[in-house]
Length: 379
Image (cartoon, rainbow, N blue to C red; front, side, top):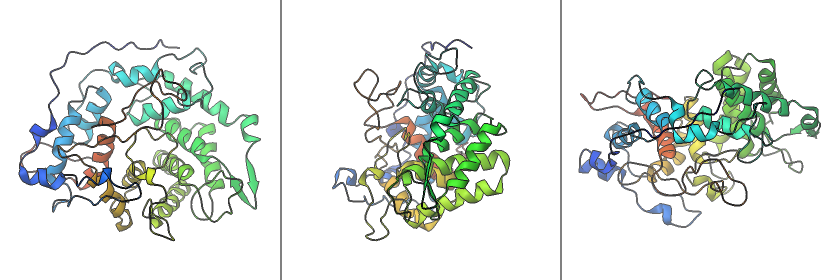
């Protein structure tokens, strides 16, 4: 077992403020928030009018800011995905977040708690690590951590609790889905235990295209919370293996979300849950428009007109300086009572991780101005 990496302070020049990177008043006007984020909780904010080319100069301040992030994983993502530059910076393990996520690993691969312990178990750490682009070659001990997650999910104790009622499997598919996502990104798709996660998820999928763990549910509606992580995992598995059934399953789930324009009730048209409109990171198992839009973007479906309402929400929340804020958190910060993460990812104000997701969603239509030296590259 490799020893946890201790991050050293990296001398860096001051990070530029994005306000100084706005190119002109027209760009500033295009991204100016209308303040709707502070309105009534059930109100969907009106979007700032996007420029003619879909994004244009509007994303440049955010991209420049991300490229100057204190977190190497964020800097690398910005350089590779949006600026088309090779990464020659420090190991991602030098970063505050990666170092914390890898710290405390035990000889058995775990972190001294149950793999699913919220939010410090191996299950959650792995999802955050692969989200930030860490690979098994950069942190080989992640494969050992994944083994503890797979052992738990395939244990008799765990599987004995799975119920099938009226022909529908009632399963918290976010567990298998997040594990499938992390393990596949770690290069473990050929592992029979990982393949079993994928086949089980496809077997358990409900007729409407989603998943649900509610034993009292009628079977007419799936849970968005359980559906998105499962679909995300199946998408990764399809990309890694080419399995057409995994792709079809992910597409069915995507269509379920799109039928609801990602957050609207089919009967009233109102937001199903106003919390889904909040920009939070990480999502863990929680549904929201930010992770849903990112999934659709990676499925090549961000241009679907049924996603426009959610994209308008995202555009409306862009700050005047071109960044995006985090709006609360699903966990308590380290050292607090209750369920805590090993990292404080941020609770308010401009946020690297939310901004990175937002740019990834909008960048497929990003057309850099001539001579800028940038090149859009969707994640």
